[in-house]
Structure formats: C-alpha cells, structure tokens
Image (tube, rainbow, N blue to C red; front, side):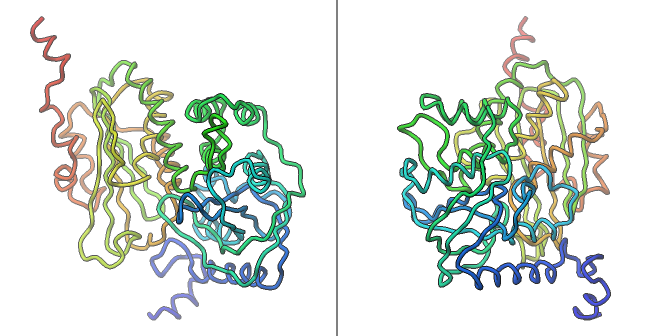
Length: 412
C-alpha cells in the first residue's frame, strides 16, 4: 500500500505509517499559524507564559516572548509535566502554534526595560495576555532540538507589550526580589516549594535568579540541563545518607515507541543512563545498526558533561526523586531506554524526565540476583540482554568491585 492510500485510510488516527504522530495534521495546523503571522504585523495572544533565549552568538543572543494567536488559558502549551498521555501531534500542534518574537540582546542586559517585560511574562504562574509588534520580513522555520520542546516560527520582534496582569506567586516573588541569594539556592528553594521543574527552568533562563550583579540571560537549552543538574545533585546528596536497598528491583514502561527500564541494585549510589537508538529513530535516521551509547557516575558524581547530553540529567533527577521520596533507600541505578523506528522527531528532554517519573510509579519486580533480574528482561528488549550488559559499566562490574566499607568489615 502506497503512502497516499495509507493516509486516506488512517486519517490521522491509527498511525498506519509507523510514525508516532501524524505529520499531515502537524503540517496543516503549522501552516495556518504561519499564515496568521504573515497577515499581520501585530500579534495578540496569551503567553502560557513562554520566553525563548537563544544560544548562537553568545553573549549576544536572540531573545523574546512566545505566544499563540489566541486569548485564554494556554498554560498547558508550556507545561511538559502535563503532556504524558496526550497524542504527540497534539503537543506538536500546540508548540508550533506559538510564534516567537526575537530580537538580539546581550545576556548581561537584565536591567533593561525589554528584559524586565520578558521577566514579567516568564515569572507568571498563569497565562498572560501580550501583544507583539513584528517585522514580517523575518520569518524562520520552527526549531527542534534534543533538550528543548519544539519551538514555533520565529519572527523579528520590534516591540512587546504586556497587556495582562502577571501573577508570580509568593515563592517566585521571594527569590526574584532577593538580590543576595545565589542562583543555585534559589533553584532549590523553588523546587522545595513544589514549583514545576519546567517553570524553574524558565525563571532561571530569563536571568531572574541569583545575586543581582551576577544575573544574566541563560540560553533555554542550557537552562533546562542546568536546573536538572542542580536539583538532581542536591537530591543525590540526600540519597547517599539513606540506608541501602536490600534487593534488586526492575521497573518496565512502554510508551510511544519507547521502552524504559530501571534496574535498582543494592549498594552505594551510582548511576548509569544507556540509550539504544534503532534505525529510523530520531538520532539514527539512516543507520543500519542500532546505536547504543551511555554514560555513568560513581558515588563521587561527575565533573564532565555527560556524553548522552541532557537526557542523562533529566533521568537522574527522576531516579533520585524516587529513591529519596519513594523508596527511602540508597541504590545503584541503571536506566535503559530503547527508541524504535517511527519515533523520529526531537521533542526535548522533558520526554525522558516525565517518562522515568512514570516508570517509577509502576510496581517493580523483585529479584535476589542480578542473573534473575537480567533474565526477566529477555523478550522485553529488542537489543540482546548480553549486548546491554556489554554496553554497561555498572552491570559488568556489579559484585566484582570491592567497596571500602566491605574491606574494613572483613578486617574487623
């Protein structure tokens, strides 16, 4: 059956083409929103809120607000914590309907009137009405990347006006007003107050946190990973004070052409993240072999950026949350992900963070040995279990490396 015949039967509902979203629906709605931008120099809408900070040309970068051409509650457009369970094309349509007005700004110009207006938008707890004056001659395609959710069409911004009433909420207002509080401490305060990670990342990005003399805009991509790293490092420090897990736990989750597996082993905190990208998936579009990569850290953590990028830190945050607030145990954590053909569009590390959170909400299977645990995975993974073990530093060395405390116990 040829592509046109498949589409006429599927009609965007059955995914007969093998993809995880309907490209025709996404393209259709995206074209509508781009035409709305082309027809008018003034765009009115409700920002979720959303602000984009680019990275090219740093320290002078493209910065600006993002809003869809509609008035009302658009908060879910910028809240990945609510996206799991929704069709992928629904998320893409919402994200690509938001027009990003950008202008070049120096990252240290956080005291300017323009950046102050952006901060009013970004810090708000709920949607804010705004108005953008655009230059129609500058229109760029949507932006996709590994770290950040899809970004809609970007248009040169002449000016922006906040017409609604932003509401920050007490926690955000407090850290924003404290000009002597370090950014790291501010991030942790917001997290302890229950502020969603995605909102903390946005506040961090617009230079609203930290000592006044140190505040600056942070590219959106960088802010996402930075906040995941800051929070997970803090959680891991607390995890390392907990008693150790006394058994092996295995968690499994399948979601939208992805398989997530967690293996929790007795021992000191260590962590590993492994990805297997199948031919026809996002980061292995034309390969013939499954591309497997991973990175890990021991009890002392790591100082270099992980080879697998932002997903490593997003997954580490979710794992540390489960150990600290769920199990109340310290453990060695191996997280494994298979990404299958059809999942071929980068949508951001939120997908990993929220799926690993859901993974740990499921009931685990319990084992007394690693051999039994690995045996339970046969038939679940498409990569041979032995190949997974060979790709894993933690699984290869588990039980073979003597820890310092076991040495002293033996001497005693």
